[in-house]
Length: 295
Image (cartoon, rainbow, N blue to C red; front, side):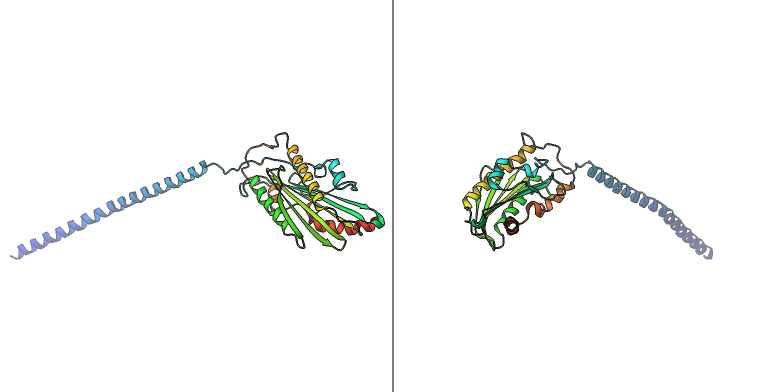
């Protein structure tokens, strides 16, 4: 009996030992399987990252339609000699405005004082400014930028401080779009009749300012006559822009793929004060200086 019990006890110990060995052998198999599974997932993740990178590199760079006009005319030659004789008859020459890039922004101004002594004087001031925009992937197409600046210029002309009897009207036959703004400015020297014509042709905005005043008791010029002359000069300046870019008026070239230097700066700021400052202020200052020099 005692030996039977001992034998049964040995058999039970042997069975327990077999179970332990089986379990121990199964552990490496599970670890190997887990390791394979982990390697497989890592490989799939790497493949996805590589595919994503390849797809990104294959995507084309953003482009934008090229600007129609690539340059500006010489500002002081944008108006014919005949036009200058009609608008600023006493002017000897134009004064070119300051610009860091004349192909992007340019301007010219003329002063005229017809001094008749005790009978008074007739003063005229004419200014032409041009701003050209370049297509840019950040700012957008050049003509769209020009449209936005055109609208801003018109609004500024309509909101001049101290302006009286302000009127606005569209102008036909001058570029792609044009607006004329007129108003009166009373200064100590007299009443200045201001005429501003803002025009856009493709990616260029032309702003023409023309004003006149009768000084020292001379009669005030007709606003209608001044506006007629201003519209004529603005149309001529717009035509000069197109002519500077060839018969078709297109600069050509491939669409711009990256932001450019000078055109980007020009898109963010208007011409310098010498080229297109406050016309009424400029006229008033000139009027106050010129008569004294001539008398």
